[in-house]
Each structure stands twice: as C-alpha cells, then as structure tokens.
Image (tube, rainbow, N blue to C red; front, top):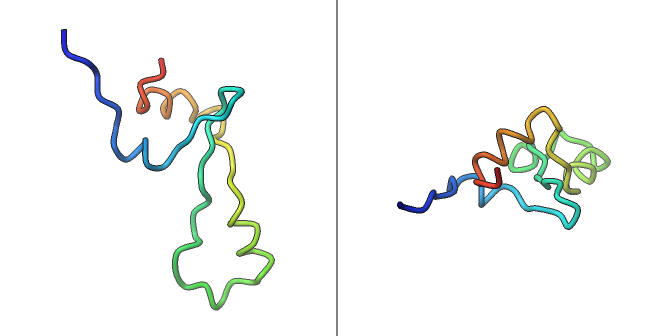
Length: 65
C-alpha cells in the first residue's frame, strides 16, 4: 500500500511543539508595513498557536491523525 503524503503547503507553514500543539506564523507581516505601528508589527513577529477548532484540519494535512 502506498504511503500517504503530507500537504507541502502545510509542512512549510506549521511546526509541532514538544507538547503536541501546532505553531504558526501570524499573517499581515509581509508588506504594507509603513502604516502599521511598531507595536503591532512586533506582536505579529511572535509565533502563535493554531486554534483548537482548526487543529484537526491541520493535523490531517500533516497526516498526524
């Protein structure tokens, strides 16, 4: 039986933490940065976690379940 492949887009965007949560980057940090405040840009720099409502979809894309 062939192996299941992970979604290439998902493996580039998400990382698994040691406790099994899924890390993600924040959106809106790539361009048009001049009108955004320094505080807002700094907050977008830090990684976030995938919401628990979306976790099952992301795990399926990463073939974790």
